[in-house]
Image (cartoon, rainbow, N blue to C red; front, side, top):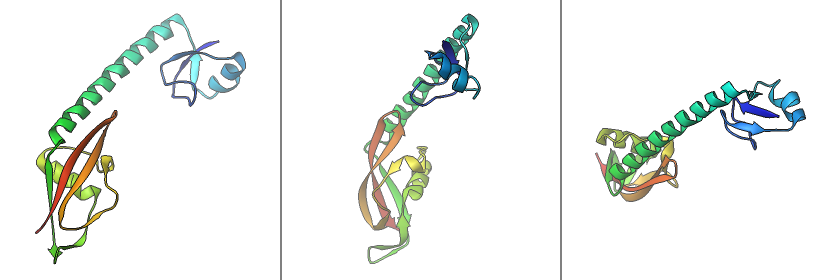
Length: 146
């Protein structure tokens, strides 16, 4: 039985793909759960358009990630914090680094920034940002006293 997936199904495929499944799996699970519909010629053409559109969107997102990586690679992001004797009052984590990046004009989600643990002292530290689609950017974070 050929079906068009309406949603992503684990170990089967992504939404919009046309798959050949066993009759029992299709009739007893996929169709009643609303995860798939019968593959008709018109539906197959529509799914091809959806897949092509999704591919274009993924290419655009990947290009944006690469552009951000080039803009960020080798840069130094400066964060100013209150400190005494080289120790910070508080710590510098992903959120503070993302805010400093935004001030520089580079938008990045705090979740994409990879650090082992928050920084608690002044200095320069290496940081990596995972921007999606396998694109990573390495940069430096400099923490200065305010």
